[in-house]
Image (cartoon, rainbow, N blue to C red):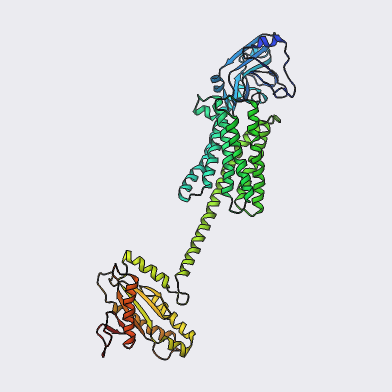
Length: 552
Protein backbone atom coordinates (compact mmCIF):
# COMPACT_ATOMS: atom_id res chain seq x y z
CA UNK A 1 0.00 0.00 0.00
CA UNK A 2 3.04 2.33 0.16
CA UNK A 3 2.25 3.91 -3.21
CA UNK A 4 -1.41 4.51 -2.24
CA UNK A 5 -1.22 5.74 1.34
CA UNK A 6 -1.08 9.39 2.41
CA UNK A 7 -0.05 11.01 5.71
CA UNK A 8 -0.72 14.02 7.89
CA UNK A 9 0.37 15.26 11.33
CA UNK A 10 -1.58 16.71 14.21
CA UNK A 11 -1.60 17.18 17.94
CA UNK A 12 -2.46 14.15 20.06
CA UNK A 13 -5.80 15.58 21.14
CA UNK A 14 -7.09 15.98 17.56
CA UNK A 15 -9.80 13.51 16.56
CA UNK A 16 -10.42 12.19 13.05
CA UNK A 17 -13.66 14.20 12.78
CA UNK A 18 -11.84 17.41 13.68
CA UNK A 19 -9.02 16.56 11.26
CA UNK A 20 -11.38 15.98 8.35
CA UNK A 21 -13.39 19.13 9.12
CA UNK A 22 -10.22 21.20 9.09
CA UNK A 23 -9.89 20.55 5.39
CA UNK A 24 -6.11 20.13 5.66
CA UNK A 25 -5.05 17.86 2.79
CA UNK A 26 -3.14 14.61 3.30
CA UNK A 27 0.36 14.41 1.79
CA UNK A 28 0.52 11.75 -0.92
CA UNK A 29 3.87 12.88 -2.38
CA UNK A 30 7.30 11.29 -2.02
CA UNK A 31 7.79 13.41 1.13
CA UNK A 32 4.86 11.83 2.92
CA UNK A 33 7.06 9.87 5.37
CA UNK A 34 8.74 13.02 6.68
CA UNK A 35 6.07 13.56 9.30
CA UNK A 36 6.75 15.29 12.60
CA UNK A 37 3.83 14.24 14.75
CA UNK A 38 3.24 14.00 17.62
CA UNK A 39 0.22 12.19 16.13
CA UNK A 40 0.68 10.80 12.64
CA UNK A 41 -2.34 10.01 10.51
CA UNK A 42 -2.21 7.48 7.69
CA UNK A 43 -4.93 7.34 5.06
CA UNK A 44 -5.41 4.08 3.13
CA UNK A 45 -8.03 3.31 0.46
CA UNK A 46 -10.08 0.24 1.41
CA UNK A 47 -9.83 -1.99 -1.67
CA UNK A 48 -12.49 -4.51 -0.72
CA UNK A 49 -12.40 -6.32 -4.05
CA UNK A 50 -8.69 -7.21 -3.57
CA UNK A 51 -9.12 -8.60 -0.05
CA UNK A 52 -10.43 -12.04 0.97
CA UNK A 53 -13.77 -12.20 2.75
CA UNK A 54 -13.76 -11.78 6.50
CA UNK A 55 -12.15 -9.44 8.99
CA UNK A 56 -9.46 -7.14 7.59
CA UNK A 57 -6.63 -5.79 9.71
CA UNK A 58 -4.07 -3.03 9.36
CA UNK A 59 -0.53 -4.37 9.51
CA UNK A 60 2.82 -2.63 9.83
CA UNK A 61 6.20 -2.64 11.55
CA UNK A 62 5.59 -2.74 15.30
CA UNK A 63 9.00 -1.38 16.35
CA UNK A 64 8.46 1.28 18.98
CA UNK A 65 4.71 1.78 18.48
CA UNK A 66 2.65 3.38 21.22
CA UNK A 67 -1.10 4.04 21.30
CA UNK A 68 -2.99 3.70 18.03
CA UNK A 69 -6.43 4.28 16.56
CA UNK A 70 -8.04 2.59 13.55
CA UNK A 71 -11.01 4.28 11.85
CA UNK A 72 -13.19 3.07 8.99
CA UNK A 73 -15.10 5.68 6.94
CA UNK A 74 -18.29 4.40 5.29
CA UNK A 75 -19.78 5.57 2.02
CA UNK A 76 -22.24 7.80 3.89
CA UNK A 77 -19.45 9.58 5.79
CA UNK A 78 -20.08 7.72 9.06
CA UNK A 79 -16.91 6.72 10.96
CA UNK A 80 -16.35 3.50 12.90
CA UNK A 81 -13.48 3.73 15.39
CA UNK A 82 -11.31 1.49 17.59
CA UNK A 83 -8.72 2.64 20.13
CA UNK A 84 -5.71 0.51 21.12
CA UNK A 85 -3.46 1.08 24.11
CA UNK A 86 0.26 0.24 24.10
CA UNK A 87 -0.48 -3.14 25.63
CA UNK A 88 -3.24 -3.92 23.16
CA UNK A 89 -1.01 -3.03 20.22
CA UNK A 90 1.67 -5.38 21.58
CA UNK A 91 -0.87 -8.17 21.99
CA UNK A 92 -1.93 -7.83 18.36
CA UNK A 93 1.51 -8.94 17.15
CA UNK A 94 2.16 -10.87 14.00
CA UNK A 95 5.10 -13.04 13.13
CA UNK A 96 8.15 -11.24 11.76
CA UNK A 97 7.72 -8.14 13.86
CA UNK A 98 4.41 -6.76 12.62
CA UNK A 99 1.25 -5.60 14.32
CA UNK A 100 -2.24 -6.50 13.07
CA UNK A 101 -5.13 -4.29 14.27
CA UNK A 102 -8.64 -5.18 13.04
CA UNK A 103 -10.45 -2.59 10.97
CA UNK A 104 -13.77 -1.82 12.68
CA UNK A 105 -16.83 -2.93 10.70
CA UNK A 106 -15.05 -5.65 8.71
CA UNK A 107 -16.57 -8.31 10.95
CA UNK A 108 -19.97 -7.34 9.49
CA UNK A 109 -20.34 -8.21 5.81
CA UNK A 110 -22.92 -5.48 5.20
CA UNK A 111 -20.72 -2.77 6.70
CA UNK A 112 -17.55 -4.17 5.16
CA UNK A 113 -18.83 -3.51 1.64
CA UNK A 114 -19.53 0.12 2.52
CA UNK A 115 -16.06 0.97 3.85
CA UNK A 116 -14.23 3.35 1.55
CA UNK A 117 -11.25 4.63 3.53
CA UNK A 118 -9.21 3.49 6.53
CA UNK A 119 -7.51 6.03 8.77
CA UNK A 120 -4.81 5.03 11.25
CA UNK A 121 -3.61 7.36 14.02
CA UNK A 122 -0.19 6.64 15.57
CA UNK A 123 1.09 8.57 18.57
CA UNK A 124 4.82 9.30 18.60
CA UNK A 125 5.90 6.69 16.03
CA UNK A 126 9.53 5.72 16.39
CA UNK A 127 10.29 4.32 12.94
CA UNK A 128 9.19 5.34 9.46
CA UNK A 129 8.64 1.69 8.52
CA UNK A 130 5.61 1.69 10.82
CA UNK A 131 4.08 3.88 8.12
CA UNK A 132 5.84 2.80 4.92
CA UNK A 133 5.20 -0.92 5.45
CA UNK A 134 1.55 -0.47 6.36
CA UNK A 135 -0.90 -2.72 4.52
CA UNK A 136 -4.39 -4.25 4.70
CA UNK A 137 -4.53 -8.02 5.09
CA UNK A 138 -6.87 -10.86 5.95
CA UNK A 139 -6.99 -11.57 9.68
CA UNK A 140 -8.12 -15.15 9.10
CA UNK A 141 -5.19 -15.84 6.82
CA UNK A 142 -2.64 -14.42 9.26
CA UNK A 143 -4.22 -16.20 12.21
CA UNK A 144 -3.71 -19.44 10.32
CA UNK A 145 -0.07 -18.53 9.60
CA UNK A 146 0.84 -17.57 13.16
CA UNK A 147 1.49 -21.12 14.41
CA UNK A 148 3.49 -22.35 11.38
CA UNK A 149 5.58 -19.18 11.32
CA UNK A 150 6.18 -19.38 15.06
CA UNK A 151 7.30 -23.00 14.71
CA UNK A 152 9.56 -22.03 11.81
CA UNK A 153 11.23 -19.25 13.78
CA UNK A 154 11.54 -21.47 16.84
CA UNK A 155 13.28 -24.11 14.71
CA UNK A 156 15.60 -21.46 13.30
CA UNK A 157 16.50 -20.39 16.84
CA UNK A 158 17.06 -24.01 17.84
CA UNK A 159 19.32 -24.64 14.85
CA UNK A 160 21.35 -21.54 15.71
CA UNK A 161 21.69 -22.58 19.36
CA UNK A 162 23.24 -26.00 18.58
CA UNK A 163 26.66 -24.58 17.55
CA UNK A 164 26.64 -22.51 20.72
CA UNK A 165 26.46 -25.69 22.81
CA UNK A 166 29.47 -27.33 21.20
CA UNK A 167 31.32 -23.98 21.23
CA UNK A 168 31.02 -23.98 25.01
CA UNK A 169 32.18 -27.60 25.17
CA UNK A 170 35.19 -27.10 22.89
CA UNK A 171 36.20 -23.81 24.49
CA UNK A 172 36.33 -25.48 27.89
CA UNK A 173 38.78 -28.01 26.42
CA UNK A 174 40.82 -25.88 23.98
CA UNK A 175 40.52 -22.21 25.01
CA UNK A 176 40.59 -20.71 21.51
CA UNK A 177 39.29 -17.16 22.00
CA UNK A 178 37.70 -16.91 18.55
CA UNK A 179 35.14 -19.40 19.87
CA UNK A 180 34.04 -16.82 22.46
CA UNK A 181 33.41 -14.23 19.77
CA UNK A 182 31.57 -16.82 17.69
CA UNK A 183 29.42 -17.60 20.73
CA UNK A 184 28.58 -13.90 21.11
CA UNK A 185 27.58 -13.79 17.44
CA UNK A 186 25.36 -16.86 17.85
CA UNK A 187 23.74 -15.46 20.99
CA UNK A 188 23.03 -12.15 19.22
CA UNK A 189 21.56 -14.00 16.21
CA UNK A 190 19.28 -16.09 18.41
CA UNK A 191 18.14 -13.08 20.45
CA UNK A 192 17.47 -11.02 17.33
CA UNK A 193 15.47 -13.82 15.68
CA UNK A 194 13.59 -14.50 18.92
CA UNK A 195 12.68 -10.84 19.35
CA UNK A 196 12.08 -9.53 15.85
CA UNK A 197 10.06 -12.58 14.75
CA UNK A 198 7.54 -12.02 17.55
CA UNK A 199 8.39 -15.18 19.51
CA UNK A 200 9.24 -12.90 22.41
CA UNK A 201 5.52 -12.16 22.87
CA UNK A 202 4.76 -15.88 23.21
CA UNK A 203 7.28 -16.33 26.02
CA UNK A 204 7.06 -12.86 27.57
CA UNK A 205 3.57 -11.54 26.73
CA UNK A 206 3.98 -8.44 28.90
CA UNK A 207 7.07 -7.13 27.13
CA UNK A 208 6.66 -3.64 25.67
CA UNK A 209 7.10 -2.68 22.04
CA UNK A 210 9.88 -0.25 22.97
CA UNK A 211 11.75 -3.03 24.78
CA UNK A 212 11.39 -5.26 21.74
CA UNK A 213 12.67 -2.51 19.46
CA UNK A 214 15.70 -1.82 21.66
CA UNK A 215 16.46 -5.53 21.86
CA UNK A 216 16.33 -5.79 18.06
CA UNK A 217 18.69 -2.89 17.56
CA UNK A 218 21.17 -3.81 20.29
CA UNK A 219 21.47 -7.48 19.31
CA UNK A 220 22.26 -6.53 15.71
CA UNK A 221 24.88 -4.01 16.80
CA UNK A 222 26.52 -6.45 19.23
CA UNK A 223 26.38 -9.32 16.70
CA UNK A 224 28.05 -7.26 13.96
CA UNK A 225 30.67 -5.94 16.39
CA UNK A 226 31.49 -9.45 17.60
CA UNK A 227 31.74 -10.56 13.98
CA UNK A 228 34.59 -8.13 13.36
CA UNK A 229 36.58 -9.44 16.32
CA UNK A 230 35.77 -13.02 15.34
CA UNK A 231 37.19 -12.33 11.86
CA UNK A 232 40.46 -11.04 13.31
CA UNK A 233 40.95 -14.07 15.56
CA UNK A 234 39.55 -16.76 13.29
CA UNK A 235 41.67 -16.10 10.21
CA UNK A 236 45.18 -17.56 10.28
CA UNK A 237 47.93 -15.24 11.59
CA UNK A 238 49.51 -13.04 8.93
CA UNK A 239 46.60 -13.29 6.48
CA UNK A 240 45.22 -9.82 7.32
CA UNK A 241 47.53 -6.81 7.16
CA UNK A 242 48.02 -4.88 10.44
CA UNK A 243 46.51 -1.67 9.03
CA UNK A 244 43.41 -3.60 7.95
CA UNK A 245 43.15 -5.23 11.37
CA UNK A 246 42.98 -1.79 12.97
CA UNK A 247 40.35 -0.68 10.46
CA UNK A 248 38.23 -3.77 11.14
CA UNK A 249 38.41 -3.11 14.88
CA UNK A 250 37.38 0.52 14.44
CA UNK A 251 34.42 -0.19 12.14
CA UNK A 252 33.28 -3.19 14.23
CA UNK A 253 32.82 -1.10 17.37
CA UNK A 254 31.17 1.77 15.48
CA UNK A 255 27.60 0.29 15.47
CA UNK A 256 27.82 -0.37 19.22
CA UNK A 257 29.03 3.17 19.94
CA UNK A 258 26.38 4.73 17.71
CA UNK A 259 23.65 2.56 19.24
CA UNK A 260 24.71 3.64 22.72
CA UNK A 261 24.73 7.28 21.61
CA UNK A 262 21.45 7.63 19.69
CA UNK A 263 19.11 5.04 21.22
CA UNK A 264 17.81 5.84 24.67
CA UNK A 265 16.42 3.06 26.76
CA UNK A 266 13.38 5.10 27.73
CA UNK A 267 12.27 5.11 24.10
CA UNK A 268 12.74 8.83 23.66
CA UNK A 269 14.32 8.73 20.26
CA UNK A 270 13.38 10.13 16.88
CA UNK A 271 13.51 8.86 13.33
CA UNK A 272 16.83 10.62 12.64
CA UNK A 273 18.45 8.45 15.32
CA UNK A 274 17.32 5.39 13.40
CA UNK A 275 19.06 6.73 10.29
CA UNK A 276 22.32 7.16 12.20
CA UNK A 277 21.94 3.65 13.57
CA UNK A 278 21.51 2.03 10.16
CA UNK A 279 24.25 4.12 8.55
CA UNK A 280 26.76 2.98 11.19
CA UNK A 281 26.70 -0.54 9.74
CA UNK A 282 27.83 0.50 6.26
CA UNK A 283 31.57 0.97 7.05
CA UNK A 284 31.98 -2.46 8.66
CA UNK A 285 30.07 -4.19 5.84
CA UNK A 286 32.33 -2.74 3.15
CA UNK A 287 35.51 -3.21 5.19
CA UNK A 288 34.66 -6.86 5.90
CA UNK A 289 33.91 -7.48 2.21
CA UNK A 290 37.32 -6.08 1.33
CA UNK A 291 39.03 -7.98 4.18
CA UNK A 292 37.59 -11.31 3.03
CA UNK A 293 38.98 -10.81 -0.47
CA UNK A 294 42.26 -9.55 1.04
CA UNK A 295 42.67 -12.67 3.23
CA UNK A 296 41.72 -14.98 0.35
CA UNK A 297 44.43 -13.42 -1.83
CA UNK A 298 46.94 -14.00 0.97
CA UNK A 299 46.12 -17.70 0.98
CA UNK A 300 43.81 -17.99 3.98
CA UNK A 301 41.82 -21.21 4.01
CA UNK A 302 39.62 -20.30 6.98
CA UNK A 303 38.31 -17.15 5.27
CA UNK A 304 36.35 -19.18 2.71
CA UNK A 305 33.89 -20.22 5.40
CA UNK A 306 33.26 -16.56 6.17
CA UNK A 307 32.97 -15.70 2.49
CA UNK A 308 30.31 -18.40 2.11
CA UNK A 309 28.46 -17.42 5.29
CA UNK A 310 28.82 -13.65 5.31
CA UNK A 311 28.44 -12.57 1.69
CA UNK A 312 24.66 -13.33 1.53
CA UNK A 313 24.22 -11.84 5.01
CA UNK A 314 25.91 -8.59 4.00
CA UNK A 315 23.84 -8.33 0.81
CA UNK A 316 20.58 -8.84 2.72
CA UNK A 317 21.80 -6.46 5.42
CA UNK A 318 22.58 -3.76 2.86
CA UNK A 319 18.95 -4.06 1.73
CA UNK A 320 17.81 -3.69 5.35
CA UNK A 321 20.05 -0.65 5.83
CA UNK A 322 18.71 0.98 2.65
CA UNK A 323 15.14 0.42 3.83
CA UNK A 324 16.07 1.57 7.32
CA UNK A 325 17.38 4.80 5.82
CA UNK A 326 14.11 5.06 3.89
CA UNK A 327 15.96 5.07 0.57
CA UNK A 328 13.28 2.80 -0.81
CA UNK A 329 10.39 0.69 0.46
CA UNK A 330 11.60 -2.72 -0.69
CA UNK A 331 9.94 -6.06 -0.20
CA UNK A 332 9.26 -7.22 3.35
CA UNK A 333 9.63 -10.82 2.11
CA UNK A 334 13.39 -10.16 2.08
CA UNK A 335 13.26 -10.15 5.89
CA UNK A 336 12.52 -13.86 5.81
CA UNK A 337 15.58 -14.34 3.65
CA UNK A 338 17.67 -12.51 6.23
CA UNK A 339 16.45 -14.82 9.00
CA UNK A 340 17.34 -17.91 7.01
CA UNK A 341 20.72 -16.45 6.00
CA UNK A 342 21.51 -15.64 9.64
CA UNK A 343 20.91 -19.23 10.66
CA UNK A 344 22.71 -20.59 7.59
CA UNK A 345 25.65 -18.32 8.39
CA UNK A 346 25.73 -19.69 11.95
CA UNK A 347 25.86 -23.26 10.65
CA UNK A 348 28.51 -22.47 8.01
CA UNK A 349 30.69 -20.70 10.55
CA UNK A 350 30.18 -23.60 12.97
CA UNK A 351 31.66 -25.88 10.30
CA UNK A 352 34.41 -23.32 9.83
CA UNK A 353 35.14 -23.28 13.55
CA UNK A 354 35.29 -27.10 13.57
CA UNK A 355 37.67 -27.02 10.59
CA UNK A 356 39.82 -24.35 12.22
CA UNK A 357 39.97 -26.29 15.48
CA UNK A 358 41.05 -29.38 13.54
CA UNK A 359 43.76 -27.41 11.76
CA UNK A 360 44.97 -25.85 15.01
CA UNK A 361 44.95 -29.26 16.67
CA UNK A 362 47.01 -30.71 13.82
CA UNK A 363 49.44 -27.81 14.04
CA UNK A 364 49.66 -28.27 17.81
CA UNK A 365 50.31 -31.99 17.44
CA UNK A 366 52.91 -31.30 14.75
CA UNK A 367 54.59 -28.80 17.05
CA UNK A 368 54.59 -31.32 19.88
CA UNK A 369 56.07 -33.97 17.60
CA UNK A 370 58.71 -31.51 16.44
CA UNK A 371 59.50 -30.59 20.03
CA UNK A 372 59.68 -34.28 20.96
CA UNK A 373 62.02 -34.90 18.04
CA UNK A 374 64.21 -31.98 19.09
CA UNK A 375 64.20 -33.28 22.66
CA UNK A 376 65.21 -36.74 21.46
CA UNK A 377 67.96 -35.25 19.31
CA UNK A 378 69.14 -33.07 22.17
CA UNK A 379 69.30 -36.06 24.54
CA UNK A 380 70.54 -38.75 22.14
CA UNK A 381 74.09 -39.65 21.19
CA UNK A 382 74.26 -39.44 17.41
CA UNK A 383 76.63 -42.41 16.91
CA UNK A 384 75.31 -45.05 19.31
CA UNK A 385 71.71 -43.75 19.57
CA UNK A 386 71.95 -44.14 23.33
CA UNK A 387 71.08 -41.35 25.77
CA UNK A 388 73.77 -38.70 26.02
CA UNK A 389 75.28 -37.00 29.08
CA UNK A 390 72.51 -34.41 29.22
CA UNK A 391 69.81 -37.11 29.34
CA UNK A 392 71.82 -39.08 31.89
CA UNK A 393 72.12 -36.06 34.21
CA UNK A 394 68.38 -35.38 33.94
CA UNK A 395 67.49 -39.01 34.66
CA UNK A 396 69.73 -39.04 37.74
CA UNK A 397 68.04 -35.87 39.07
CA UNK A 398 64.63 -37.46 38.50
CA UNK A 399 65.83 -40.56 40.34
CA UNK A 400 66.53 -38.51 43.45
CA UNK A 401 62.77 -38.00 43.73
CA UNK A 402 61.56 -41.41 42.56
CA UNK A 403 64.49 -43.71 43.53
CA UNK A 404 64.02 -46.05 40.60
CA UNK A 405 67.76 -46.93 40.49
CA UNK A 406 69.98 -48.19 43.26
CA UNK A 407 73.38 -48.44 41.50
CA UNK A 408 75.40 -46.64 38.86
CA UNK A 409 78.02 -48.36 36.69
CA UNK A 410 80.63 -46.70 34.45
CA UNK A 411 81.76 -49.03 31.63
CA UNK A 412 84.94 -48.28 29.71
CA UNK A 413 86.25 -50.11 26.61
CA UNK A 414 89.79 -51.35 27.32
CA UNK A 415 92.55 -50.13 24.99
CA UNK A 416 90.08 -48.36 22.73
CA UNK A 417 92.76 -45.95 21.44
CA UNK A 418 94.79 -48.94 20.29
CA UNK A 419 91.75 -50.23 18.36
CA UNK A 420 91.43 -46.87 16.57
CA UNK A 421 95.16 -46.71 15.84
CA UNK A 422 95.43 -50.32 14.63
CA UNK A 423 92.13 -50.75 12.72
CA UNK A 424 91.03 -47.20 12.01
CA UNK A 425 88.35 -44.89 13.39
CA UNK A 426 85.63 -46.49 11.24
CA UNK A 427 86.13 -49.82 12.99
CA UNK A 428 86.29 -47.99 16.30
CA UNK A 429 82.95 -46.36 15.58
CA UNK A 430 81.51 -49.75 14.73
CA UNK A 431 82.64 -51.07 18.11
CA UNK A 432 80.94 -48.13 19.83
CA UNK A 433 77.72 -48.77 17.89
CA UNK A 434 77.73 -52.49 18.81
CA UNK A 435 78.30 -51.64 22.47
CA UNK A 436 75.53 -49.02 22.34
CA UNK A 437 72.94 -51.32 20.74
CA UNK A 438 73.80 -54.11 23.18
CA UNK A 439 73.48 -51.86 26.25
CA UNK A 440 70.23 -50.49 24.87
CA UNK A 441 68.77 -54.02 24.99
CA UNK A 442 69.34 -54.29 28.72
CA UNK A 443 66.50 -53.38 31.12
CA UNK A 444 68.59 -50.53 32.53
CA UNK A 445 69.06 -46.84 31.65
CA UNK A 446 72.12 -46.73 29.41
CA UNK A 447 73.96 -43.62 28.23
CA UNK A 448 77.19 -42.67 26.48
CA UNK A 449 78.93 -40.00 28.57
CA UNK A 450 82.31 -39.81 26.84
CA UNK A 451 84.39 -41.21 23.99
CA UNK A 452 84.46 -44.87 25.03
CA UNK A 453 82.71 -44.50 28.39
CA UNK A 454 79.15 -45.64 29.03
CA UNK A 455 76.94 -45.58 32.13
CA UNK A 456 74.18 -47.79 33.45
CA UNK A 457 71.58 -46.81 36.04
CA UNK A 458 70.37 -50.07 37.58
CA UNK A 459 67.83 -51.26 40.10
CA UNK A 460 69.08 -54.27 42.00
CA UNK A 461 65.72 -55.11 43.58
CA UNK A 462 64.07 -57.69 41.29
CA UNK A 463 60.34 -57.89 40.58
CA UNK A 464 60.22 -60.96 42.78
CA UNK A 465 61.56 -58.94 45.70
CA UNK A 466 64.97 -60.62 45.74
CA UNK A 467 68.05 -58.43 45.77
CA UNK A 468 70.60 -58.98 43.01
CA UNK A 469 74.32 -58.28 43.26
CA UNK A 470 75.47 -55.53 40.88
CA UNK A 471 78.80 -57.21 40.13
CA UNK A 472 77.01 -60.37 38.94
CA UNK A 473 74.62 -58.37 36.77
CA UNK A 474 77.37 -56.29 35.18
CA UNK A 475 79.53 -59.39 34.68
CA UNK A 476 76.77 -60.91 32.54
CA UNK A 477 76.42 -57.64 30.62
CA UNK A 478 80.16 -57.45 29.96
CA UNK A 479 80.25 -61.04 28.72
CA UNK A 480 77.43 -60.19 26.35
CA UNK A 481 79.35 -57.12 25.13
CA UNK A 482 82.51 -59.13 24.51
CA UNK A 483 80.59 -61.73 22.51
CA UNK A 484 78.70 -59.07 20.52
CA UNK A 485 81.86 -57.21 19.50
CA UNK A 486 83.58 -60.48 18.62
CA UNK A 487 80.63 -61.57 16.42
CA UNK A 488 79.80 -58.26 14.77
CA UNK A 489 83.27 -56.76 14.30
CA UNK A 490 85.34 -59.68 12.93
CA UNK A 491 88.05 -57.29 11.68
CA UNK A 492 89.36 -57.08 15.27
CA UNK A 493 91.54 -60.13 15.87
CA UNK A 494 92.03 -59.75 19.64
CA UNK A 495 89.29 -59.85 22.26
CA UNK A 496 87.84 -56.48 23.24
CA UNK A 497 87.34 -56.29 27.02
CA UNK A 498 85.73 -53.84 29.42
CA UNK A 499 86.54 -52.27 32.80
CA UNK A 500 83.73 -51.22 35.13
CA UNK A 501 83.34 -49.18 38.29
CA UNK A 502 80.10 -49.49 40.31
CA UNK A 503 78.71 -47.18 43.01
CA UNK A 504 75.51 -47.36 45.03
CA UNK A 505 73.03 -44.45 44.95
CA UNK A 506 71.56 -43.10 48.16
CA UNK A 507 68.70 -40.61 48.25
CA UNK A 508 70.84 -37.75 49.48
CA UNK A 509 73.89 -38.50 47.31
CA UNK A 510 74.67 -35.99 44.57
CA UNK A 511 75.48 -37.00 41.03
CA UNK A 512 78.96 -35.62 41.48
CA UNK A 513 79.71 -37.79 44.51
CA UNK A 514 78.24 -40.97 43.00
CA UNK A 515 80.11 -40.43 39.73
CA UNK A 516 83.32 -39.76 41.65
CA UNK A 517 82.97 -43.06 43.53
CA UNK A 518 82.21 -45.06 40.37
CA UNK A 519 85.02 -43.33 38.47
CA UNK A 520 87.51 -44.04 41.27
CA UNK A 521 86.58 -47.72 41.17
CA UNK A 522 86.85 -47.75 37.37
CA UNK A 523 90.35 -46.31 37.77
CA UNK A 524 91.15 -49.11 40.24
CA UNK A 525 89.95 -51.66 37.68
CA UNK A 526 92.16 -50.20 34.96
CA UNK A 527 95.17 -49.76 37.22
CA UNK A 528 94.90 -53.38 38.35
CA UNK A 529 94.98 -54.90 34.89
CA UNK A 530 91.65 -53.96 33.22
CA UNK A 531 89.00 -56.53 32.17
CA UNK A 532 87.43 -56.44 35.60
CA UNK A 533 84.59 -54.99 37.65
CA UNK A 534 85.20 -53.09 40.90
CA UNK A 535 82.25 -52.35 43.18
CA UNK A 536 84.01 -51.68 46.51
CA UNK A 537 86.90 -49.33 47.28
CA UNK A 538 90.40 -50.85 47.00
CA UNK A 539 93.78 -49.86 48.48
CA UNK A 540 96.25 -48.23 46.11
CA UNK A 541 98.67 -51.24 45.91
CA UNK A 542 97.69 -54.84 45.42
CA UNK A 543 99.98 -57.74 44.69
CA UNK A 544 97.14 -60.02 43.94
CA UNK A 545 93.65 -59.81 42.63
CA UNK A 546 91.64 -57.75 45.12
CA UNK A 547 88.65 -59.02 46.96
CA UNK A 548 85.76 -57.02 45.59
CA UNK A 549 87.04 -57.29 42.01
CA UNK A 550 85.29 -59.54 39.54
CA UNK A 551 86.81 -60.64 36.26
CA UNK A 552 84.79 -60.16 33.17
